[in-house]
Amino acid sequence: MSGTPFVIFGPEIWSLQNEGGISRYFQELIKGLSKNGIGGEIFAQSNSNERFEKLESPNFAISILNDARVSSNQINQLLDSTRHGAIFHPTYYSRNHKNIARKIPRVITVFDMISELYPEKKPRFRKVIDDKRISIQNSDLILSISEQTRNDLIHFYGIPKDRILVTYLGSNLHLLPTANDAREIKSEYILYVGKRDGYKNFSNFVTAYSHSKSLKENFLIVAIGGGEFTPSELFDFQKLGISNNVTHVDANDKQLAMYYRNAACLVYPSLYEGFGLPPVEAMSLNCVVIGSTGGSIPEICKNAAQYFDPTSIDSIEHVVSTTLSDVQKMEHMRKLGQKVAESFTWEKTASDTLEAYKSLIR
Image (cartoon, rainbow, N blue to C red):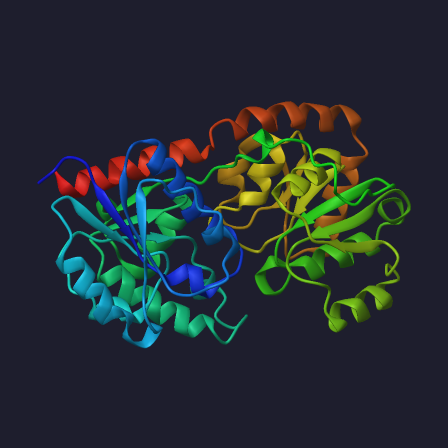
Protein backbone atom coordinates (compact mmCIF):
# COMPACT_ATOMS: atom_id res chain seq x y z
CA MET A 1 0.00 0.00 0.00
CA SER A 2 1.02 3.59 -0.57
CA GLY A 3 2.42 5.41 2.45
CA THR A 4 0.47 8.57 1.59
CA PRO A 5 -3.20 8.49 2.55
CA PHE A 6 -5.92 9.36 0.05
CA VAL A 7 -8.68 10.62 2.33
CA ILE A 8 -12.36 10.42 1.41
CA PHE A 9 -14.67 12.48 3.59
CA GLY A 10 -18.32 11.50 3.95
CA PRO A 11 -21.27 13.83 3.25
CA GLU A 12 -23.02 13.68 6.62
CA ILE A 13 -22.34 16.96 8.43
CA TRP A 14 -22.63 19.26 5.42
CA SER A 15 -26.38 18.61 5.17
CA LEU A 16 -27.02 18.34 8.93
CA GLN A 17 -25.99 21.87 9.93
CA ASN A 18 -25.52 25.25 8.31
CA GLU A 19 -22.80 26.23 10.76
CA GLY A 20 -21.28 24.73 13.88
CA GLY A 21 -18.25 23.31 15.64
CA ILE A 22 -18.20 20.01 13.74
CA SER A 23 -18.35 21.77 10.39
CA ARG A 24 -15.51 24.02 11.54
CA TYR A 25 -13.48 20.96 12.57
CA PHE A 26 -13.75 19.32 9.15
CA GLN A 27 -13.19 22.61 7.34
CA GLU A 28 -9.95 23.14 9.24
CA LEU A 29 -8.89 19.49 9.00
CA ILE A 30 -9.30 19.44 5.21
CA LYS A 31 -7.43 22.75 4.94
CA GLY A 32 -4.60 21.41 7.12
CA LEU A 33 -4.32 18.14 5.21
CA SER A 34 -4.13 20.05 1.93
CA LYS A 35 -1.27 22.15 3.32
CA ASN A 36 0.51 18.88 4.20
CA GLY A 37 0.20 17.72 0.59
CA ILE A 38 -2.59 15.23 1.31
CA GLY A 39 -5.43 14.91 -1.14
CA GLY A 40 -8.58 12.95 -1.64
CA GLU A 41 -12.28 13.42 -2.22
CA ILE A 42 -15.17 15.06 -0.42
CA PHE A 43 -18.62 13.56 -0.76
CA ALA A 44 -21.47 16.04 -0.35
CA GLN A 45 -25.13 16.51 -1.07
CA SER A 46 -26.82 19.75 -2.07
CA ASN A 47 -26.68 21.92 1.03
CA SER A 48 -26.27 25.45 2.36
CA ASN A 49 -23.48 24.78 4.84
CA GLU A 50 -21.38 27.93 5.17
CA ARG A 51 -18.23 26.02 6.12
CA PHE A 52 -18.57 23.78 3.06
CA GLU A 53 -18.89 26.82 0.84
CA LYS A 54 -15.62 28.20 2.28
CA LEU A 55 -13.56 24.99 2.07
CA GLU A 56 -9.93 25.56 1.13
CA SER A 57 -9.29 22.18 -0.47
CA PRO A 58 -7.08 22.44 -3.56
CA ASN A 59 -6.06 18.77 -3.27
CA PHE A 60 -9.58 17.43 -2.76
CA ALA A 61 -12.13 16.75 -5.47
CA ILE A 62 -15.81 17.22 -4.60
CA SER A 63 -18.37 14.59 -5.61
CA ILE A 64 -22.01 15.62 -5.31
CA LEU A 65 -24.19 12.67 -4.30
CA ASN A 66 -27.81 12.02 -5.12
CA ASP A 67 -30.68 11.82 -2.65
CA ALA A 68 -29.61 10.89 0.91
CA ARG A 69 -31.80 7.76 0.83
CA VAL A 70 -29.65 6.18 -1.87
CA SER A 71 -26.32 7.80 -1.10
CA SER A 72 -24.85 4.64 0.50
CA ASN A 73 -25.19 2.82 -2.85
CA GLN A 74 -23.49 5.67 -4.66
CA ILE A 75 -20.74 5.83 -2.04
CA ASN A 76 -20.11 2.11 -2.48
CA GLN A 77 -19.74 2.60 -6.22
CA LEU A 78 -17.31 5.49 -5.71
CA LEU A 79 -15.28 3.57 -3.13
CA ASP A 80 -14.93 0.70 -5.63
CA SER A 81 -12.81 2.95 -7.83
CA THR A 82 -10.49 4.31 -5.14
CA ARG A 83 -6.77 3.73 -5.17
CA HIS A 84 -4.54 2.02 -2.62
CA GLY A 85 -3.94 3.99 0.53
CA ALA A 86 -7.51 5.29 0.61
CA ILE A 87 -9.26 5.96 3.93
CA PHE A 88 -12.94 6.74 4.42
CA HIS A 89 -13.66 9.35 7.12
CA PRO A 90 -17.40 10.06 7.57
CA THR A 91 -18.15 13.54 8.88
CA TYR A 92 -20.80 12.40 11.36
CA TYR A 93 -22.59 9.33 12.66
CA SER A 94 -25.12 7.55 10.45
CA ARG A 95 -26.97 4.24 10.42
CA ASN A 96 -26.23 4.18 6.68
CA HIS A 97 -22.63 3.28 7.57
CA LYS A 98 -23.67 -0.35 8.05
CA ASN A 99 -24.68 -0.37 4.35
CA ILE A 100 -21.31 0.90 3.15
CA ALA A 101 -18.94 -1.95 2.34
CA ARG A 102 -15.69 -2.15 4.32
CA LYS A 103 -13.53 -1.90 1.22
CA ILE A 104 -11.00 0.47 2.78
CA PRO A 105 -10.05 1.45 6.37
CA ARG A 106 -12.58 3.67 8.08
CA VAL A 107 -12.15 6.40 10.69
CA ILE A 108 -14.84 8.10 12.76
CA THR A 109 -14.40 11.16 14.98
CA VAL A 110 -16.37 11.12 18.24
CA PHE A 111 -16.95 14.56 19.72
CA ASP A 112 -18.72 13.96 23.03
CA MET A 113 -21.09 11.77 25.02
CA ILE A 114 -23.80 14.38 25.50
CA SER A 115 -26.53 12.17 24.03
CA GLU A 116 -25.61 9.30 26.33
CA LEU A 117 -25.30 11.48 29.43
CA TYR A 118 -28.38 13.62 28.87
CA PRO A 119 -30.81 11.57 26.72
CA GLU A 120 -33.75 13.43 28.25
CA LYS A 121 -32.57 16.83 26.99
CA LYS A 122 -33.67 16.34 23.38
CA PRO A 123 -35.84 13.67 21.67
CA ARG A 124 -33.32 13.34 18.81
CA PHE A 125 -30.58 12.18 21.21
CA ARG A 126 -31.94 8.62 21.10
CA LYS A 127 -31.34 8.50 17.35
CA VAL A 128 -27.87 10.03 17.77
CA ILE A 129 -26.96 7.22 20.19
CA ASP A 130 -28.16 4.53 17.76
CA ASP A 131 -26.36 6.13 14.81
CA LYS A 132 -23.18 6.59 16.82
CA ARG A 133 -23.11 2.96 17.90
CA ILE A 134 -23.45 1.80 14.29
CA SER A 135 -20.71 4.16 13.09
CA ILE A 136 -18.36 3.07 15.89
CA GLN A 137 -18.99 -0.61 15.19
CA ASN A 138 -18.17 -0.07 11.52
CA SER A 139 -14.92 1.84 12.07
CA ASP A 140 -11.33 0.65 12.30
CA LEU A 141 -10.08 3.64 14.27
CA ILE A 142 -11.81 6.23 16.46
CA LEU A 143 -10.55 9.76 16.88
CA SER A 144 -11.54 11.45 20.15
CA ILE A 145 -11.24 15.20 20.66
CA SER A 146 -10.25 14.91 24.34
CA GLU A 147 -9.15 12.44 27.00
CA GLN A 148 -12.53 13.00 28.63
CA THR A 149 -14.32 11.78 25.52
CA ARG A 150 -11.93 8.82 25.15
CA ASN A 151 -12.63 7.76 28.74
CA ASP A 152 -16.37 8.15 28.18
CA LEU A 153 -16.14 6.06 25.01
CA ILE A 154 -14.47 3.28 26.95
CA HIS A 155 -17.10 3.55 29.69
CA PHE A 156 -20.21 3.64 27.48
CA TYR A 157 -19.12 1.43 24.60
CA GLY A 158 -16.40 -0.80 26.05
CA ILE A 159 -13.99 0.13 23.26
CA PRO A 160 -10.36 -0.96 23.75
CA LYS A 161 -8.18 2.04 24.52
CA ASP A 162 -5.78 1.27 21.67
CA ARG A 163 -8.59 1.76 19.13
CA ILE A 164 -8.99 5.40 20.21
CA LEU A 165 -6.57 8.23 19.48
CA VAL A 166 -6.93 11.70 20.98
CA THR A 167 -6.64 14.54 18.45
CA TYR A 168 -7.41 17.87 20.10
CA LEU A 169 -9.13 20.74 18.31
CA GLY A 170 -7.60 24.15 17.71
CA SER A 171 -8.30 27.81 17.06
CA ASN A 172 -7.08 30.32 14.51
CA LEU A 173 -9.32 33.26 15.40
CA HIS A 174 -6.37 35.14 16.88
CA LEU A 175 -4.74 35.19 13.44
CA LEU A 176 -7.64 37.03 11.79
CA PRO A 177 -7.49 40.76 11.05
CA THR A 178 -9.46 43.13 13.25
CA ALA A 179 -13.09 43.52 12.23
CA ASN A 180 -14.28 47.04 11.52
CA ASP A 181 -17.92 46.19 10.85
CA ALA A 182 -18.99 44.71 14.19
CA ARG A 183 -21.66 46.21 16.40
CA GLU A 184 -20.09 48.32 19.13
CA ILE A 185 -21.01 47.42 22.71
CA LYS A 186 -20.56 50.63 24.73
CA SER A 187 -20.64 49.00 28.18
CA GLU A 188 -18.45 46.33 29.72
CA TYR A 189 -19.83 42.92 28.95
CA ILE A 190 -19.61 39.24 29.80
CA LEU A 191 -19.47 37.13 26.64
CA TYR A 192 -21.39 33.91 25.99
CA VAL A 193 -20.78 31.99 22.74
CA GLY A 194 -22.80 29.21 21.10
CA LYS A 195 -26.07 27.37 21.58
CA ARG A 196 -27.91 28.04 24.81
CA ASP A 197 -30.49 25.30 25.37
CA GLY A 198 -30.36 22.03 27.31
CA TYR A 199 -26.96 20.98 28.63
CA LYS A 200 -25.44 24.30 27.51
CA ASN A 201 -26.90 25.63 30.76
CA PHE A 202 -27.37 29.27 29.71
CA SER A 203 -30.47 29.52 31.92
CA ASN A 204 -28.47 28.80 35.11
CA PHE A 205 -25.91 31.40 34.10
CA VAL A 206 -28.44 34.22 33.52
CA THR A 207 -30.24 33.30 36.73
CA ALA A 208 -26.97 33.54 38.67
CA TYR A 209 -26.22 36.86 36.98
CA SER A 210 -29.63 38.21 37.96
CA HIS A 211 -28.88 37.43 41.63
CA SER A 212 -25.79 39.66 41.67
CA LYS A 213 -26.26 43.40 42.08
CA SER A 214 -22.64 44.10 41.14
CA LEU A 215 -22.80 42.06 37.93
CA LYS A 216 -26.06 43.71 36.83
CA GLU A 217 -24.73 47.19 37.55
CA ASN A 218 -21.34 46.76 35.89
CA PHE A 219 -21.72 44.25 33.04
CA LEU A 220 -24.09 43.39 30.21
CA ILE A 221 -24.36 39.86 28.81
CA VAL A 222 -23.62 39.53 25.09
CA ALA A 223 -24.68 36.18 23.61
CA ILE A 224 -23.22 35.33 20.19
CA GLY A 225 -24.65 32.64 17.93
CA GLY A 226 -27.24 30.04 18.83
CA GLY A 227 -30.06 31.89 17.06
CA GLU A 228 -32.22 34.76 18.26
CA PHE A 229 -33.59 34.60 21.78
CA THR A 230 -36.74 32.51 21.95
CA PRO A 231 -40.03 33.83 23.40
CA SER A 232 -39.40 31.59 26.41
CA GLU A 233 -35.96 33.11 26.97
CA LEU A 234 -37.32 36.65 26.63
CA PHE A 235 -40.02 35.83 29.18
CA ASP A 236 -37.35 34.48 31.58
CA PHE A 237 -35.25 37.63 31.17
CA GLN A 238 -38.28 39.74 32.01
CA LYS A 239 -39.11 37.60 35.04
CA LEU A 240 -35.49 37.90 36.25
CA GLY A 241 -35.50 41.65 35.70
CA ILE A 242 -32.63 41.63 33.20
CA SER A 243 -34.38 42.30 29.87
CA ASN A 244 -32.22 45.39 29.29
CA ASN A 245 -29.02 43.62 30.32
CA VAL A 246 -28.93 40.78 27.79
CA THR A 247 -28.36 41.19 24.06
CA HIS A 248 -27.91 38.74 21.16
CA VAL A 249 -25.46 39.25 18.30
CA ASP A 250 -24.74 37.32 15.11
CA ALA A 251 -21.08 37.50 14.16
CA ASN A 252 -18.72 36.14 11.54
CA ASP A 253 -15.29 34.87 12.62
CA LYS A 254 -13.55 38.25 12.41
CA GLN A 255 -16.32 39.91 14.38
CA LEU A 256 -16.33 37.10 16.94
CA ALA A 257 -12.61 37.61 17.49
CA MET A 258 -13.26 41.29 18.19
CA TYR A 259 -15.94 40.48 20.75
CA TYR A 260 -13.54 38.11 22.54
CA ARG A 261 -10.81 40.76 22.61
CA ASN A 262 -13.09 43.39 24.13
CA ALA A 263 -15.02 41.22 26.62
CA ALA A 264 -14.50 41.32 30.36
CA CYS A 265 -14.56 37.53 30.25
CA LEU A 266 -16.14 34.50 28.61
CA VAL A 267 -18.54 32.54 30.80
CA TYR A 268 -18.90 28.91 29.69
CA PRO A 269 -21.48 27.15 31.90
CA SER A 270 -22.03 23.83 30.05
CA LEU A 271 -22.96 20.78 32.09
CA TYR A 272 -20.62 18.79 29.83
CA GLU A 273 -18.32 19.39 26.86
CA GLY A 274 -16.38 16.92 24.76
CA PHE A 275 -13.87 19.70 24.08
CA GLY A 276 -15.37 23.19 23.99
CA LEU A 277 -13.97 25.51 21.31
CA PRO A 278 -15.02 28.89 22.78
CA PRO A 279 -12.68 28.68 25.82
CA VAL A 280 -9.66 28.02 23.56
CA GLU A 281 -10.73 30.82 21.22
CA ALA A 282 -11.11 33.14 24.20
CA MET A 283 -7.73 32.28 25.74
CA SER A 284 -5.96 32.80 22.42
CA LEU A 285 -7.50 36.30 22.25
CA ASN A 286 -6.51 37.44 25.74
CA CYS A 287 -10.01 36.89 27.13
CA VAL A 288 -10.42 35.47 30.64
CA VAL A 289 -12.36 32.19 30.85
CA ILE A 290 -14.73 31.45 33.72
CA GLY A 291 -16.16 28.00 33.10
CA SER A 292 -17.83 24.98 34.58
CA THR A 293 -16.27 21.78 35.82
CA GLY A 294 -18.33 19.91 33.20
CA GLY A 295 -16.63 17.32 31.04
CA SER A 296 -13.36 18.30 29.40
CA ILE A 297 -13.35 22.03 30.22
CA PRO A 298 -10.76 21.72 33.05
CA GLU A 299 -8.71 19.33 30.87
CA ILE A 300 -8.53 21.94 28.12
CA CYS A 301 -8.21 25.17 30.14
CA LYS A 302 -6.05 23.73 32.92
CA ASN A 303 -5.05 26.38 35.49
CA ALA A 304 -5.83 29.26 33.14
CA ALA A 305 -9.54 29.42 34.04
CA GLN A 306 -11.69 29.81 37.11
CA TYR A 307 -14.29 27.07 37.64
CA PHE A 308 -17.77 26.78 39.14
CA ASP A 309 -20.27 24.00 39.74
CA PRO A 310 -22.68 24.38 36.77
CA THR A 311 -25.59 22.91 38.76
CA SER A 312 -25.28 25.53 41.52
CA ILE A 313 -26.63 29.05 40.95
CA ASP A 314 -24.74 30.25 44.02
CA SER A 315 -21.45 28.78 42.77
CA ILE A 316 -21.81 30.44 39.36
CA GLU A 317 -22.66 33.82 40.90
CA HIS A 318 -19.83 33.66 43.44
CA VAL A 319 -17.06 32.59 41.04
CA VAL A 320 -18.04 35.00 38.27
CA SER A 321 -18.44 38.02 40.55
CA THR A 322 -15.32 37.43 42.65
CA THR A 323 -13.15 36.76 39.59
CA LEU A 324 -14.30 39.90 37.79
CA SER A 325 -13.60 41.98 40.90
CA ASP A 326 -9.98 40.81 41.19
CA VAL A 327 -7.92 42.82 38.69
CA GLN A 328 -4.61 41.08 39.48
CA LYS A 329 -6.12 37.62 39.12
CA MET A 330 -7.68 38.58 35.79
CA GLU A 331 -4.35 39.78 34.40
CA HIS A 332 -2.61 36.61 35.59
CA MET A 333 -5.30 34.46 33.95
CA ARG A 334 -4.90 36.27 30.63
CA LYS A 335 -1.19 35.44 30.57
CA LEU A 336 -1.80 31.81 31.54
CA GLY A 337 -4.60 31.51 28.99
CA GLN A 338 -2.49 32.66 26.07
CA LYS A 339 0.18 30.12 27.02
CA VAL A 340 -2.33 27.27 27.29
CA ALA A 341 -3.97 28.22 23.97
CA GLU A 342 -0.65 27.79 22.16
CA SER A 343 -1.06 24.01 22.60
CA PHE A 344 -4.26 23.96 20.56
CA THR A 345 -3.78 24.70 16.87
CA TRP A 346 -5.56 23.39 13.79
CA GLU A 347 -2.13 22.63 12.32
CA LYS A 348 -1.53 20.18 15.16
CA THR A 349 -5.01 18.71 14.71
CA ALA A 350 -4.24 18.03 11.04
CA SER A 351 -0.76 16.67 11.81
CA ASP A 352 -2.02 14.30 14.52
CA THR A 353 -4.89 13.13 12.31
CA LEU A 354 -2.50 12.49 9.42
CA GLU A 355 -0.39 10.26 11.67
CA ALA A 356 -3.55 8.38 12.63
CA TYR A 357 -4.38 7.83 8.95
CA LYS A 358 -0.86 6.59 8.22
CA SER A 359 -1.09 4.08 11.06
CA LEU A 360 -4.06 2.49 9.29
CA ILE A 361 -2.47 2.07 5.89
CA ARG A 362 0.97 0.89 6.96
